[in-house]
Length: 404
Image (cartoon, rainbow, N blue to C red; front, side):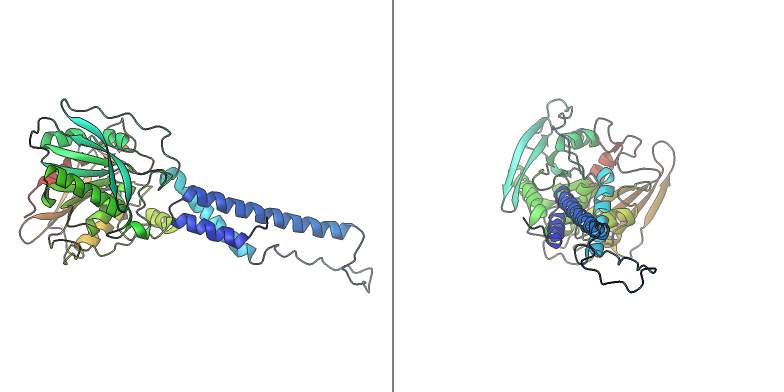
């Protein structure tokens, strides 16, 4: 079968945009391999012709004492040098992403369920909507005959699963103290081979489509089941999950009243895997967040409040992304209060942005010396840092604080 190098590159690009980096890398590697074989074969044929003693294609030399230099062998495929450079860059980017961005396949088996507070429940559920289906774990607090007092949707990071994330964040125990339910949606290997939420795909950055529609639909279904209002519903996430939480805050202000973003990126900072890696390494540019400072056509005028955590030693998602999320939400407005903390746990800078009515609509926690891990998390889960401050406790405190 005839192999088309350019077509293989186009297929690799489509797979990359579709959030399938493993398949894209394999396709690109095959293209490079075939091209290299063709080049080697062409070179071998030229050498064989030059050493065979049969210069059938050469003109008779006028001066035997003066030899001409052999012509430089051109690539076997037109434009191959430029195309190989493109593929090489894509392969380097994909290879660089694997250890840090969680682009390796996730756990081969689900993590063990977390230890639960006495009397609580941890249920297996499935949400089916027009945009897709996702399984999720549902934590229900103990001794709440009238149902939970609120709901947090928790979005795991790459290579994690709901059990791992629940264990590492210890969110169930924090939620138990406040009578809150917690939903842990699971990304599928079919939709992303490495269990990442596809925050970098345009189809998952807008209202009414893709993963935002699935996750908002899940929250709406639980709101109806437990008779909850918008003011009682929140979303939080880590890394890719944090980036998706930022997207939901921008696009579903009628569903979520507050969002927690840990080590995430601003919505619209990437359009594919390559631009995602650039945003992760160098920082992404914030997109103006609808619902903060302007009317959100998707919902009420009340903006989604945000609490952001980011370590300044994060080598996976550049620390500037946390500040960019804040910039997209509050614009040029300066924080009303800035606090510096030293002592046990990580030192940090805490900036609070206050509205005219006195309520805090955004908190930015910049953690000194912290890497790509959930602050104050438990060692039983992945991507956790037990030193603190306790991100789970601070997020719930912020979620439940008066918004007006």
